[in-house]
Structures are given as structure tokens and as C-alpha cells.
Image 1 (cartoon, rainbow, N blue to C red):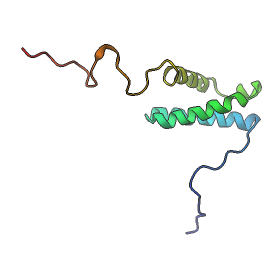
Image 2: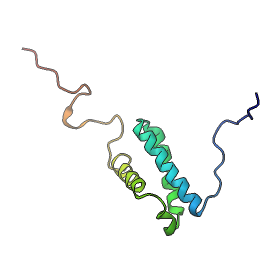
Image 3: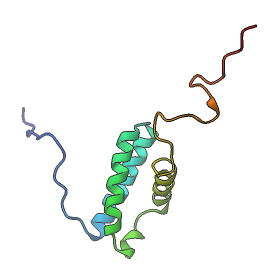
Image 4: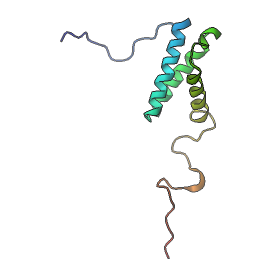
Length: 108
């Protein structure tokens, strides 16, 4: 019972700038990547969107503090899986393939 009570929900975000903002953007990208690897696409999208919202506020010298591997991952996922040209979830499949894989054999 010695633990302090914690209110539900995240803490309000503080105004970040400089190195703190760069660290937060990198943290959000890493978190999005963890969600992606765990096949948690909704959570991945949320963290990715938060990182993308903060990224324009970085100064050029702060953008250099974010590891290039994280930026490449973010760009690749943003364009390929979340971009405008992708097929929405549950949309039609290419080639007419069924969800189970092979098409059924015709009956003689």
C-alpha cells in the first residue's frame, strides 16, 4: 500500500526542444518499431504518427542526432505500409488468391 496512486492515462506532454526533442522522436520511432515487430499495427501507427508530428519541430543539428537506421525504418514503413498508395486493410487481394492460399481443385 506504500505505492503512490497513479491516475489513468498518459501524462500531458511537455514542450520539448533541442536534444530532448530529438531523444523523444528517436524513442517514439523505437517504440513504433517494437510494436511493428510484435504485429501491433494500430499501436505502431499511433507512435509513428506521434514521431512524425514532432519531427518537423527539430532543428537541422538536432535531426542529425537521430540514428540514420531509425529514419530509414520510419521512411520505409511510412511509404510502403501507411502511405496513400497502399491497399487499405481488408481490401481486395491481387491475383484473386483466397485467404487460405491455393485455389480449390475443380471437381471431376
